[in-house]
Length: 640
Image (cartoon, rainbow, N blue to C red):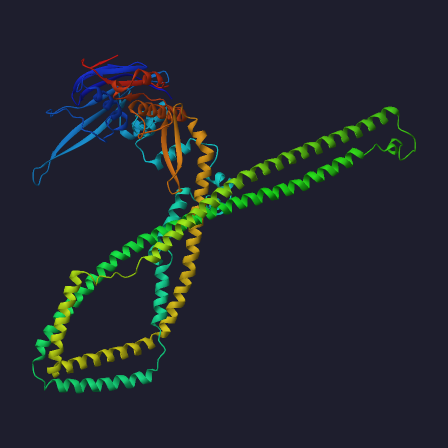
């Protein structure tokens, strides 16, 4: 389908009262700022895409200070040689509420096709079924900013749909070590598989910790909570303590009230000690952050070492595979040589020239035919054996060359791993040298608090010597602590059975956690392999749809991780980062041109800011569709 914009008529649309504009295959809309260039483009995109040129959805189009009017855009198109007139009309309805007399304004759109009025759904259906004009494809195939404004995942989805040669399942089946993902792709998409594995790992991390530390700590805590004590002996201790507590309380009733002063001073000492403890805690926290940072660096290095080891294993596997292939093909080529020698020595059996039934010799013509057939079969057999032998020889040479390349990669990965292990050792030494607890005893604030505590405790000692009430309360406190400890031990002994059951259940969960985590990480690794293979196989096929733009679908980050991207390039420069305005316009128009060719849909394209394009850039613009450039100059609004 090829649509050509012949004319566009605006009525009461934004700042335009009534105007009609005609267009050619390539047109320029010229005029000073505010003359109405963008209004023309916005009217075109509003009619078919319900947005203005800046892609604002359902934009305000009513003229200012005009209460009663009906904005209308009427467009004459040539679609595959057939002229069609379409129109979009917006009506405004004002209603007053019966309760509070407030006004509410509602907007409604109607459409026309060749003067026949219809609703939006029928308008969309009629254009597509009768003229092939697909409104779902209109914006991305006609507006320069729509495709490049999408997220990378959305752009990748569209572009990979343009590569019809292989499905994700076919790519997975061709990818080594991706058997499980290939099986899953028979029922799910790549996005669904990724989401399932991510959800599994997130749930595992939330419930059990990154490496199962939550579950392990819970089991360790339960093990420590188990006790092995004599309950009968504890019962005797509890009864004895209760009797001592009763005696102590009776004695306290006869002691003077002076204990209150002692208690106040004791509280002050406790508060000072709490401040001292807070100082120590804060210092330990700061030191802990430092140790945690080093530990994180160690973890990252270990992960990098694991990745390097994985690459070494892959190289070793590839070398082993190639060596086995060489060994297998060497055996086969020796078999071919033996067969060739046997065939070469084979001679014609003269006995077959005599009829087995009558004993008479065959006619000379029959003899010549039999000898010819023998020589022909022998020649064909020798040729087939030689061909197969040459093929096996080529395969052996190819595998030997591949082994040399892989060995070079293996040496490089070994060097990388050795360097990483050296860096890890340095971090481990640094971690060991960093103390676990901070020493703040030399600070002025610490010394001042310690002196206050010493002074008050000295005074407390005086109270303790003179105040029997304090002695009794201290004794009561000790007795209560002992009673609490005894009762806790009794309660712990009763919980041993329940603890054993909890530990058994947790160990089952631990096994499930480890297996689920391993399975999910394995699937994620296989998805990464399939993604890399897909990018390698389909990049050239996708880029073949475009003349100027070439897309980059993957990159490697500084830490060596593989990352999927979708970045167009123009003249080997990244779009939006190292491209100027001219190259960005070239990229956008080339993308539209490629998409239009792929979908078989040709729509007019409006290009704003054309005054910024150099003559060289304009020469490079080659569009199969109708193009309208919006350009600022000092004159009145006009179309050339």
